Image (cartoon, rainbow, N blue to C red; front, side, top):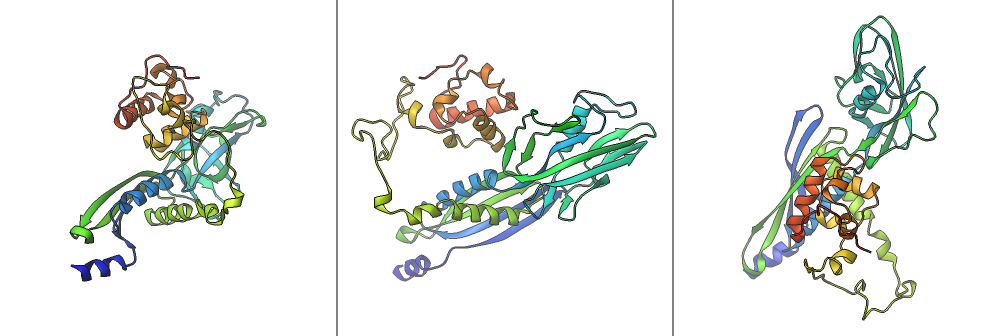
Length: 338
């Protein structure tokens, strides 16, 4: 038994892809195994990889579209089936893949009648469309339609401000989240003090990065994020405040939640990160400057549904996460913490 434990403890952690498949052009799946971990380490890595994959992996998207001779986003053009707003929504669904971080431009110049798709767009050499069949617009008459698009690489969900754009330019709320979903599971092997853990991680992407590329990029981001702490010296750290009397003490190692007193430590110390929300809901809350549970509970269910790009589905997800993690519900009317 002792020999077995020693050999396992010195074995390097390794990972490999055990399953990979393309479910559709815009849905790629990968399953990876990472082992061996000491007890408790697999969950630490699994949680971190899930968050990094959903929030830190970069995606490419269209952020702006320009239509010549159009003044308003709800304008209609004779010979085009959709409004300009509908075309912008369809452009938002295109999943480009870019090899560089520079802002690029694409042009769709098509003469109808024709159903225009992503394959009809002229892209720069460093950019390609994952799905050429992605629908954009239908031209019903023999007219020419020209759409100029701006393509950028970023992370998360970005809500554009229409101010500052020229006539005929319309911002597109960019969804730069190529990783659609991530699951992880932990499995034990061995016994006694020699017990070790294996973690399985499943990743679904839109194909712009493959699951292998996504897990590799997420790993690099996780390595880079804490790098500054490696160079911290004691004399570089300054402390302030009354540590004995402060409920926000940096030395606190745990939090106690009293559901009957919502103005306790739960309101001041707990960030919404602990709810493990889907990336869309999480990023919408961040955009609305909702960073803590206290901020969140200032919104009722009705108020939450009015947050920009935050629909009823997101409200339900937040409410379920609050109950699952803290056994509290999203109020019908806000608690309004100070």
